[in-house]
Length: 210
Image (cartoon, rainbow, N blue to C red; front, side):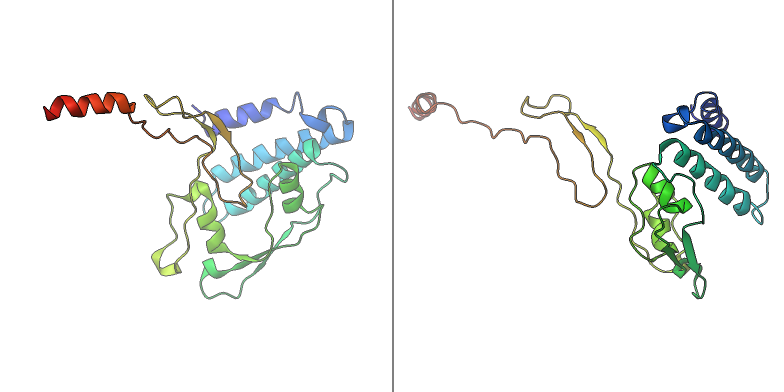
């Protein structure tokens, strides 16, 4: 079972054997190892901090984790600078706060997104929309007093397998999406039931009509 401790244990093991470009470039390896260690220690500090200060070490833990990812998987230039997101804080409701991307290739947000192959924000969006779009927060709805926000749609990805006892017409296939197009089922529809041959149907009709 994956827990916070076992998760960091597995991540910690990467410091001894860095992946990607960090395994071949000494400068990348130094950054990867140092950033990953700082990310873990900051996360541990956040776990014992009160809610008044927890966000600060969590932010820098995430920032250092992004630097480690970039060192291993981002093409040159791979050193991250700047935060990459700006916030306008003039909203009456906190979830109406607008978050905007800076769209600089070397900022922490865009650089990390590129390194993991994830699309970034295409423009300003509200904090409430980001909350409800986060699949890890599906069971944590925004307060009713904070307005209405469209919930995220759960789309399980992986392999479509035919249900037990289904017709051989069903196929097994992989499903993938980049999140920008609607998914369409790739399984074959079960064939329509075929009528018995006319001669059999005729004999059945004649037998029951006598």
